[in-house]
Amino acid sequence: MKVQYGVYCKTGDPDQKLIVSHGEQHIPVRTRRKYAGKKAKIKAIEQLTGNAMDTHLSTSEVNVYIGKHIFDTPQWAEYHRLFELFANELEQVPEQVELKFYVVIEFDASMCNPEDERLVYMITRLLENNPVDEYKGLQNPIISFSIQAYNK
Image (cartoon, rainbow, N blue to C red; front, side):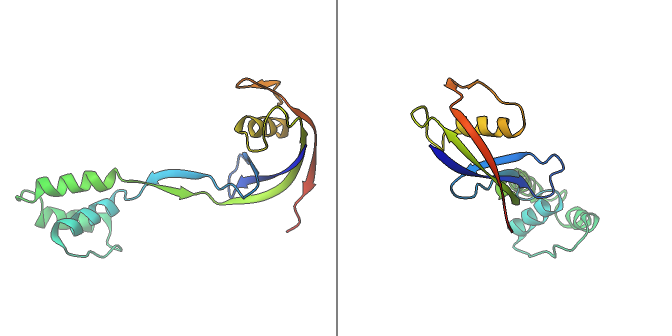
């Protein structure tokens, strides 16, 4: 069976780590904090007081506000709880990827399907010039491969 895979790289990635995908473009995601530092403080203040704060304030200006209006008051414990809640909130962010080229793989279809993550791993290793004979119980089913340029 012959199948075409897209080969992508993260935009701006100096390592040029390859991302191999069959069918639809695969967009990897990374986890990051939704609110960090000053943004978490502002979000906690807004939740606590109902007052919208200017996000263009500097960190020291936000700290001065906290020192004057919240620190050493009955609201301090609740502010601290809210700050921890927002500071630990995570979100999934899609990575920016760029299609580099296509690779056409001929493989023994009786051993696996084109979406099998073990086959995708073997293709990635092959493209990195470091092929493997077996991965997670799958003998390498790749018979041949060819690279096709991507015309923008």
